[in-house]
Length: 278
Image 1 (cartoon, one colour):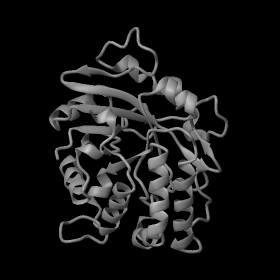
Image 2 (tube, rainbow, N blue to C red; image 1 turned 90 degrees about the horizontal axis):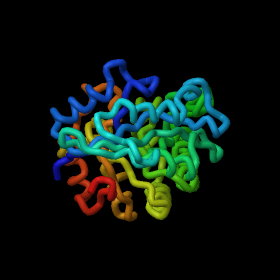
Image 3 (cartoon, rainbow, N blue to C red; image 1 turned 90 degrees about the vertical axis):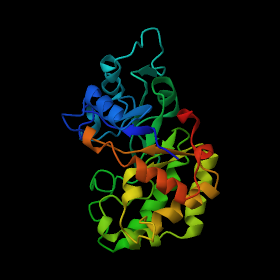
Image 4 (cartoon, rainbow, N blue to C red; image 1 turned 180 degrees about the horizontal axis):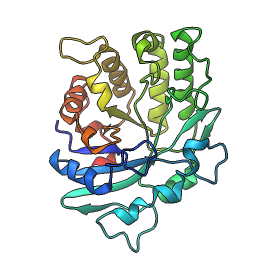
């Protein structure tokens, strides 16, 4: 397998993106990496949906779609969701990464997602944002409560009724020092429950650059046994997959060879990739 697609790239339209992450610089990085498809995935919370915290106030749909004005392709005459095009041999897709904060509250809904974007990724584990996504005291009682909330949030995402896929699945962001304990605190049956529900909801699973380079509990092939198990379960549950660097600057658009080898180690081949990669 050769990874020629990166469907999780942030530009400087994301508040956490670097200034250097212009469309032009990201496309230049894509060319250097010999990518054939790139998906821009800036953070988004629609102004039509209440509950956005300050990080998201300015990152609404209109803001995210400013990228259409920056693309070196002709999007005139297309409806808002028809933004794909080809430039210098690279197919460009415009999607977004929305937010999920629990209790069924997400930054988009089905109608808005389908009207405006080529794809919508949903995170369930932005646990580094304490006080916003998770309580300030999460973890005070140890890694087990993080495991419990992590599992619950991912299960809730499968019930939202929209979205194209789930990004950086089960990576305990904000709690990486407890990574092994947290992931082992979720049982195989719980992973099966989630990935079966994700497959039924047509939510694809990201093979993330971090996952492929994680050095926690590595095996003889250099991959994390924890994430190998998780993604193998996802494959066995019938999930589809996509590749994403989650780059917030052009220099982080990398790791594609590792992602390909990781996928192969899980028994994931081209037939298991989502149709957007065709």
